[in-house]
Length: 108
Image 1 (cartoon, one colour):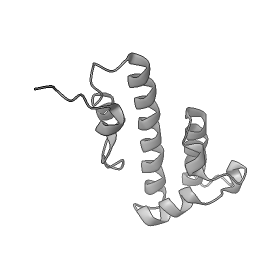
Image 2: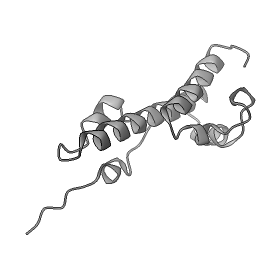
Image 3: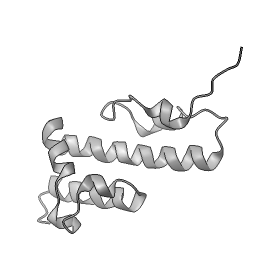
Image 4: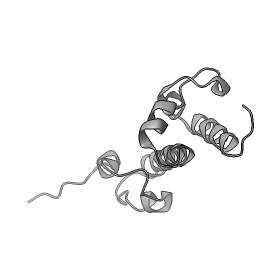
């Protein structure tokens, strides 16, 4: 009988981004994965989940409103959709910066 080793994407599939902490995500990837795959992908996934959770918090827990905001062009992001920027660490940081500014009432 062979043992099926799950890929990192399979491990992360189905996780609720609003209830998982980044530290918990880091422990989900099996040790058998190559370090670049394991660490780079899990760090970006954790950052994405953090940004999404922060967007939900910005809208007082309203997941529908936050999903609409993430899917619509945002002037402060150069009319880009936040979801499109969540593909790289720099984009995630831009989205998180805007969320922080909105939380603190800074006009963007």
